[in-house]
Amino acid sequence: MLKDLNTNQGLKPWRVESVFYCIVIVLIFIGAFKIAEAVFKPLAISIVLGFLVYPVYTFLARFKVPKFLIVFIIFFLLFSFSYLIFSFVYYSVTVLMKQLPYYQNQLAFIMKDVLSRYKVDSSVINDVNFSGYIYPFLTRAYNEIIGFTSSLVVVFLLLYFLLSEIHVFEMKLDKAFKKPISTRFIGALDTINNQIGKYLGIKILVSCLTGILVFIGLTLFGQDFPLVWAVLSFVFNFIPSIGSILAVFFIVITSLIQFYPNLNIVLYVFIYNTSIQMLIGNILEPKMQGKRLDISPFLLLCFLFFWGWLWGIVGLLISYPFTVIVKVIVDNVSWLKSFSVFLGGSEILSNISHISSKDKEI
Image (cartoon, rainbow, N blue to C red; front, top):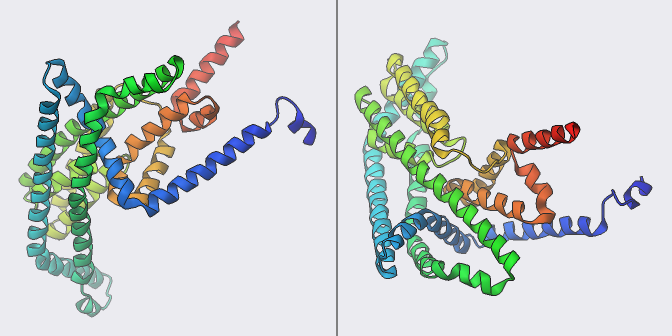
């Protein structure tokens, strides 16, 4: 065993130390992100917004639009969108609060009906205060969204300085590093920008389409709050893997409470929304996205849970962009290539098998 470790093919001490130091640094960063959440969360959001608006910036710059006017247009669009979000949140919470007594009575009726079918005493339901569980949840969600909205001032301030320096960043890299290193840096940044910009742009389009179809379908079925569920479907679509499942789950649950005991409409709502999510998420979006970074779906889900634990809803929304950043970094650092293999999906394995088969032919 010791003999194997001392050979050239064994583990080199400097490599073991490097891995150990990397793990320690990552843990320190995680602790810093968690403790200084109020500082790092706006910074992370501003970076993601920077990737989102950069295509608009470059598009307007091609037509020789002055830099200050480009920044003004971008911020006008962002402020308008933020106002719409705030108005929608206020409207949604107001409507839900008004309808809450009806849903509470309907939920109690459903539980009594189910218990009576199994000959269980349903009098215990009368003592359950459903609003005591629902009101805190709505209040917490409302406060989190309001807190996010209030932090937009800091986010927009950071984004302003980011956009004001974005056109000279490549020149700074050329001055700071030698030519091969600066070229590699710029190439990595271009890859990150292209991947995240394309992902966010197409994601907005398919999420808008999903929201419109959800609104039309729920309006035809007569379900309450079709606009609320359409916007929530739009937002949940940005959460990888589990976002569409959560959207369908909440829609079907509220449909069950509203239409019970008519389960046929509930079934139609379930089939309709599931079909939309499957057709758009599994057929339309992959064709529009085309070739993307090969990232393991399992590790992408792990990153999703990690960012969700770290920063809540905001963490869930930014999980994919930051996973792309991590993947591009490990792809471009030679001594992190091993991590790149583990982060990769099935494509890297097919490439390895293709190379090995060529070697056998030679």
